[in-house]
Image 1 (tube, one colour):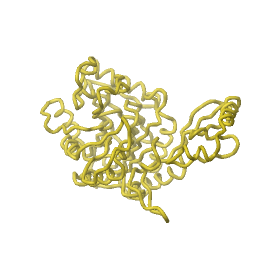
Image 2 (cartoon, helix red, strand yellow):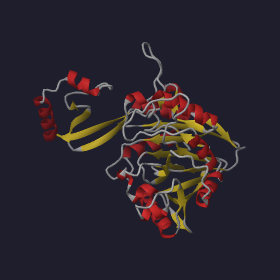
Image 3 (tube, helix red, strand yellow):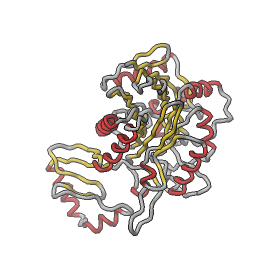
Image 4 (cartoon, helix red, strand yellow):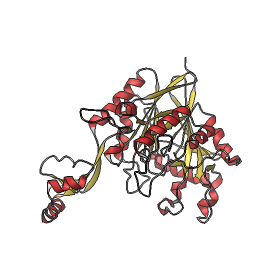
Length: 411
């Protein structure tokens, strides 16, 4: 008979520095919260530079870390890591192999990358107390196709990489604008062979009839409205949903993780396609759905008694000082969410502890150096974080209350 259990989930951990030598009591407070849960989960937003080596495959947003950051996360209290994200392939296949080797050596439940597609997409399992937990993690891009794991086929060897949820970006244009774009393409003498050359190392996108054009790698569709859409590949989604259902059918608690950078113009807004996919995952048997990508807090939804965290922003965010795109204050505000479940697996409540990544001093004074760790927020800052999250979540039917700097979602 399983006992009641709890899962703490945080924002993403873009970690480059070993935190174990830090004796600050504020970091100890954070660790105490994480260690109080049976499962403590984050996304490892990096790749490990280990014995397999590797080479940078990205420009200014390249990121890799030494294996000792895993020991730091372990000491903080984490025991479960999603590995599927836009930095997982920053060192190529060698980084994938080193990361797999090191997270296994540190005894994390981990998923989202693998030696091939089958391995990367397979649910990974671990027992916490009396509870069997499975983790399925995936990334929806955007990113080059070569960063995603593939199985061996005739003439091609297997490729280590990331577990992919395949999606495509489509722009709908009203007829007049669509015809203008087609005429520009014709005046530029753009040919299928030219577009194939410029698509490398990708293949050109597939088109479906005369109402679609490939304008140098982007598909535009003739439509009655002007809009942009993310379209989830049904075959890819179906494979993930089947894996969820298979694990849930074994009386296993399934955590599903999605990473993506298909952000809305307002990056705190939940994309409609993510909500639809999250609901599909819950319908298939997921007990918890967590997403990262946009480095900001997004809404929390309780769907069929299952918590859905559409975006938990950041937990550790070791970026360069000159990266001004991360200066908005919402990037540095988040929560630690502790989900408490009954022995049956039914959600009982969620406790939310607001945090400030890098410390409150740096948030109010940009000239102040940021701490390499988050601190608990209190007073007006805690109220602002929780009230903002409550407002965003209200549109999803979620009632979030707060008392003494702690948020609560009760069922």
